[in-house]
Image 1 (cartoon, rainbow, N blue to C red):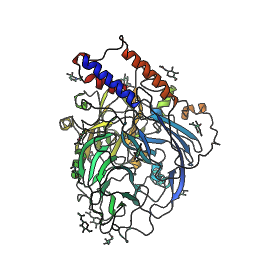
Image 2 (cartoon, rainbow, N blue to C red; image 1 turned 60 degrees about the horizontal axis):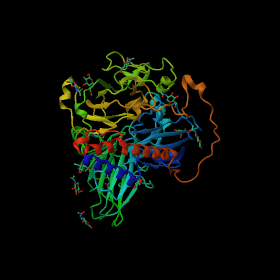
Image 3 (cartoon, rainbow, N blue to C red; image 1 turned 90 degrees about the vertical axis):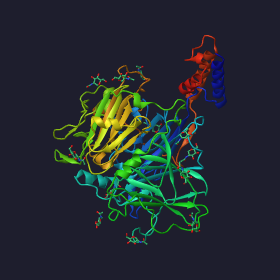
Length: 622
Ligand SMILES: *[C@@H]1O[C@H](CO)[C@@H](O)[C@H](O)[C@H]1NC(C)=O
Ligand SMILES: *[C@@H]1O[C@H](CO)[C@@H](O)[C@H](O)[C@H]1NC(C)=O
Ligand SMILES: *[C@@H]1O[C@H](CO)[C@@H](O)[C@H](O)[C@H]1NC(C)=O
Ligand SMILES: *[C@@H]1O[C@H](CO)[C@@H](O)[C@H](O)[C@H]1NC(C)=O
Ligand SMILES: *[C@@H]1O[C@H](CO)[C@@H](O)[C@H](O)[C@H]1NC(C)=O
Ligand SMILES: *[C@@H]1O[C@H](CO)[C@@H](O)[C@H](O)[C@H]1NC(C)=O
Ligand SMILES: *[C@@H]1O[C@H](CO)[C@@H](O)[C@H](O)[C@H]1NC(C)=O
Ligand SMILES: *[C@@H]1O[C@H](CO)[C@@H](O)[C@H](O)[C@H]1NC(C)=O
Ligand SMILES: *[C@@H]1O[C@H](CO)[C@@H](O)[C@H](O)[C@H]1NC(C)=O
Ligand SMILES: *[C@@H]1O[C@H](CO)[C@@H](O)[C@H](O)[C@H]1NC(C)=O
Ligand SMILES: *[C@@H]1O[C@H](CO)[C@@H](O)[C@H](O)[C@H]1NC(C)=O
Ligand SMILES: *[C@@H]1O[C@H](CO)[C@@H](O)[C@H](O)[C@H]1NC(C)=O
């Protein structure tokens, strides 16, 4: 028993030392005014969506378990919902910012998101989810840092740099939407933006004069963490920095086995962290490139983003040709092998300490299996639509979660097929019936000729396998059951499949969709509804007081006083400790008193005198 009390005392000591004992986490507030501004990223003036006048929007930079409060002011001329892509919104799909769960924020209204970034770390982004708005901007990076007490699996970088890349059209989202509505394809994008800026003039013929490009200034010899997200519409991009290795360290909330890449394919909706050491002699600046992947380079030359990496001791401008992309335009094997090489560092800590190694997903029995198959766009009822398993999703006018809450019937059907429909495709509000605490296997089968990315809200899933051809039961033999990465997006190569496993422990209604914006807009999505058969306010938070009503419930919505004062200056973010902190510190002291009392609770395996007690306490209390 001696070691037991030793670890207990050690634990309490650490808690008091860090002032963290059982206290509630701080809250971080942002004011986001979403409006149009005129910008000319590719030399052509156009209306883009800015946040607080900035394009891209400000970086949200918080720490595990922080409460994030964002007051969103819709200054557009159309509805708005902000989606926090990859943020799990544990127990609260009310804050998820997609049409299946939330009523849109009307023009001139504001609405305050309030959520906890519970048990998460990593690199993500946010974007407006309605009406094709992402094609006009409104996006920005979302970072969740480790708590100070949990080490990151690499030396603290000298700096933290965020980069958003994406294909871009000089037409705005309303014009692009019109093209899609009229049954046409968007065609080749007009370029690729890096942090909202056009290409550096690396070639006088290809790039017109007068375009503002991104410059990232670094100190020689230092190592930076560079976070890159592809926030574009539908183009897979190859990312590379001339003469510099990209040491991959993290993707969408999991630390990876660290490996060097000279370039990495970043598909739509994906985010990565690289550690980049400034180990070159700065004889000149270096190119940062994001170029379209799997296309005819001759034709797609202009769809290339070029920024500049500038050492403080640089001896001159970057010049000459761009670093080569992988030379395999028509062979996707290299890219798939690269994707398979991204594995989880199972010994690294994440949002919580990880003394025993990671969650052993490979030994859990699957309880539900869904094969979701896409196809190239089809005509349904005279409209060009996209499908998943033969169903083109139609958003209900009353959000699914709200309909459940208010017992509105007939809004959706819980009948999404486990295998693709074989009959003619149809338009439906058909939803997957997820079993709470089940373990779901989803096979994403891509029957189209381009790469798709899929994303699920509310969860990170394990990417356990991908291969060419049609998935069969035998394909399970190839699954990675040990260190498949847990992340929030997965690419599926044309004519290929990707298998993911999801532990359905987050109650709510969660969107599963393609991140390719054009295909999403035309119906390639559905929702997974996860309900606790014994509902309570612990497994799912109650509907927030400010929830909006629409559709069948629109009469319940009070009009908003739209004469709200406009906040001025800065990016409007501030840090505050709210009253919950004090309440929970008091609770913490009460719990400690109980622990110390002779009749206090007993700890598992105390007699082993092992380290387990300590880790149990840390794991459960912090
Ligand atoms: C979008 O572009 C069209 C012209 O193509 C223009 O008429 C319209 O005002 C623009 N809309 C917005 C919101 O910028
Ligand atoms: C709108 O913003 C005001 C502050 O300017 C805030 O008090 C109010 O709660 C916000 N409305 C909603 C619905 O979040
Ligand atoms: C994995 O994480 C551990 C623990 O932080 C770290 O020591 C190790 O270097 C990492 N391994 C790789 C291959 O990245
Ligand atoms: C995020 O905030 C931390 C301090 O809390 C800072 O060290 C880091 O550089 C910030 N990252 C970005 C990208 O702003
Ligand atoms: C610029 O691009 C054009 C078109 O691809 C090419 O013909 C030319 O050689 C390039 N110029 C330089 C200096 O590389
Ligand atoms: C990655 O490349 C750098 C040089 O850029 C090298 O110093 C480092 O050892 C490499 N790391 C790994 C894990 O290969
Ligand atoms: C270092 O700089 C010189 C020019 O100043 C250049 O010729 C040489 O190739 C550079 N070496 C490396 C390793 O980059
Ligand atoms: C790429 O496009 C060019 C111009 O249309 C064409 O001449 C060339 O054959 C194409 N290359 C391939 C490999 O298809
Ligand atoms: C998984 O299923 C097998 C039989 O199908 C059973 O023997 C095993 O105990 C189950 N494992 C768990 C962890 O439930
Ligand atoms: C949904 O699944 C649950 C089990 O998780 C089951 O009890 C219920 O009947 C199913 N509902 C429908 C409509 O299939
Ligand atoms: C699409 O599915 C059909 C039928 O299963 C199959 O014959 C065809 O090869 C698939 N095409 C692609 C690109 O996956
Ligand atoms: C959950 O909370 C709401 C409002 O906060 C309350 O009305 C409801 O009774 C609670 N439900 C349960 C099951 O505790």
